[in-house]
Image (cartoon, rainbow, N blue to C red; front, side, top):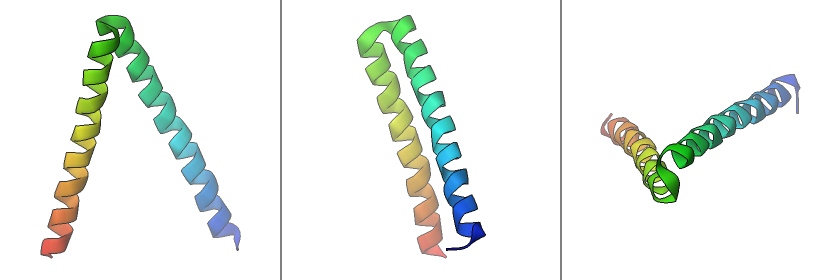
Length: 64
């Protein structure tokens, strides 16, 4: 395992930490603004939106 591998691992960990921080910050703001049910609805819309974009990209790649 060379240097490129470890740089990729470190970059992935840092990226996931930033994504987690962003997600939990957004969830905290949604919880504060709309309460538990609003935060749940917000998180589901966020997850469904990400899944929709990923599915469209996978469909486009399969068509090629």
